[in-house]
Image 1 (tube, helix red, strand yellow):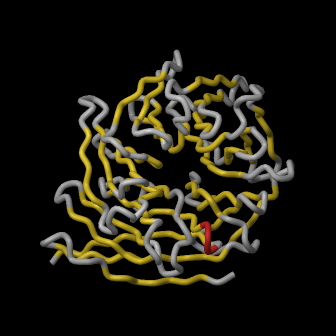
Image 2 (image 1 turned 180 degrees about the horizontal axis):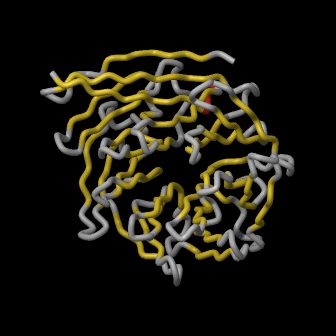
Length: 327
């Protein structure tokens, strides 16, 4: 296993500050495993799905030690994942139509099938404040809710046909919001009735991933038009800014750190870039990913301001360490 650290200066974008980030990258032990999504566990470990290898992986950032956990059903195609409060890892099996729960202490996996034959491809999961797991089903055009305590699973069909529900987040008020990657819409789900409301974005938008900011606004990556967008759930106002890489930048994975900084990847740029956006100054700065990135499909922010990445095409995971030095 090889660990690569690179210190790369950011473009001067905030007048009174000099900014720098460190990107650490680790090779995934299984070759061509296609690490798809990252997650952060309560102990700070970086977890990730290995879609082609049919495994979940865990990196200890302090030691660099990596461990892999094989899944019991062959060809599950683990896609998204998230940790619960006890440290169990929940994942979506996009190729076998189930949601799984891995116990890291024993390596055992419990499977929750969708049951509805139309709900074939669980995609991205997220927990709400009550401990319920919400997830999108992209090609099936459903939103799912699983109660881990009872095992009850409910599904709601998205009103727009071929909406391709993709990234999903939960606001501080406990309301799930998701992208309609096949349409120019965001949508919310009533957490009790599971009624879906849709909100149009500018023509041609194709939002792919979402991140919630500390002020409650929702940022989205517009994959089709090369835009960073912000949606205000209260006013439904939409603001957009062109991605630094231009219309073909293909913004993809996105996260917001606790200080409100927005981070996203440009998957249409070679090497892929990691972009930092300051919502206060409306300024961007871009940094090439050392290995090239290989398409960063998702990212997640930690409580202490780091960003975890999965780099699918180069078989690596990475940790971004931001630092800001006042002048």
